[in-house]
Length: 261
Image (cartoon, rainbow, N blue to C red; front, side):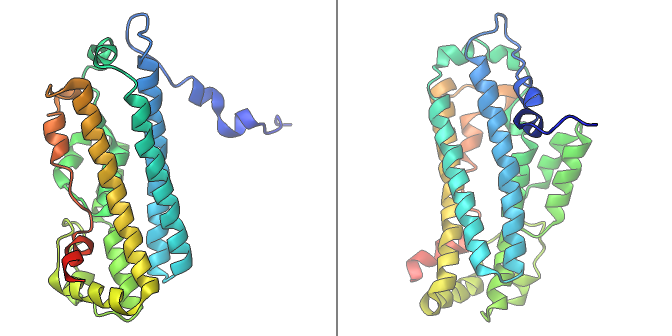
């Protein structure tokens, strides 16, 4: 007879609470915080992917109430992800440098789940897949995301299902390409805003999602700058110089129409 399910066994707490293995001598006090924060990030990335996939399914099904509910959850998670930076910023540059060398080639740039999120939201760069050549599972997940429609594609089909004139070239676009602004899509979006407050609300929630990710990126940039300045990032990445280049929207059409409304 198997043992009864408990809080600990259901959550696999022994596995989770024994997954922190500092590398520094001592170990240094702040390395534990660094590990836990980034492990929690990865858990939230997993949940965000779960929610984005569900949101896409609800949009393809033209299920506006569940889609809006799911966006609300995504936005709440994003606020939590951003607020974790406040905790990281309690660590001073000297405290980080006390164990930084022990990270060796490890870098947040290597987060496969965050790359999956970028791909799912439309920011696709096939060159990134090559960075995961030593992790067949992560590479396969990224290859799959690269070839799948994005949240933006699901949204355009949702607008089409509701009778709005989304051009065929947008509905049938190459989903492996980055999302690019389209004047014809923008005209359809302007019509949505002027004629359908319910669908306009969905548009605004996607703007919130886009802004939420940009807020996380911006806070991340400033946290890194505050901690290491202009030094190269861990693992040999360009650090702040690279992170600044990522401050761009996922859904450019929703931003372009602001001056036309």
